Amino acid sequence: MTLDKFRPLAERLLDPFVNAADRIGLTPDGVSVLAFVFATLAGIAYTLAGIEVVTVGADPLWYIAGAVFVLCNGWMDLLDGALARKQGSDSKAGDLLDHVIDRYADIVIIAGLAAGAEAYLIGFLAVTGVLMTSYLGTQAQAVGLDRVYGGLVGRADRLAIIGIVTAIAAGYSAPVGGLTLVVWLLVFLAVVGHFTALQRFYYSMRALA
Image (tube, rainbow, N blue to C red; front, side):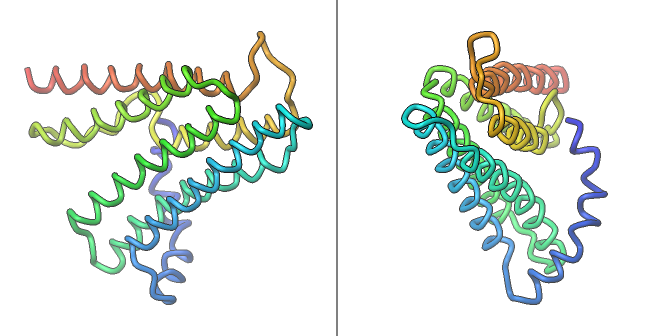
């Protein structure tokens, strides 16, 4: 979880955006919904990128658009928590909404990648790995432990990797080892997602022993 180490720095950089959001009357829940809109746009862009590859050749604009939308989703995901703290509106309901929206956002983004690449089995393994990672993090809290954020790859890292790889895919469409970069990305998400989930499970079981 490399990027989570930089969360304090990111939150300082967020200050101007938090202040602007507060001035125009945005709420943390509204920002969470906006984050999901960006995730949905990313999923659509990745799906269209795949359709273009099959029909008339890759259009790099779709991959670039998807990468931008993914990074916007991650930025909004940071912003909603910072805005809630500024407005003093932290609540369990808001936390629940944020986590539900994040999970749907993960599903939409990965489904878009899988649909565009027509790699449905790998896409299924990728999305289940991501969901199990998040589930194990919150389930630890449900059994009396602190919420678990540890493991090889967290959500911030995952979004950054998706954005970077798909941006590269915009200019490099040749297969690598028989697979496109997007399919390799799905393989990575599947393997690392389930590995991270098992890491969190192991940590939680040890803590409960």
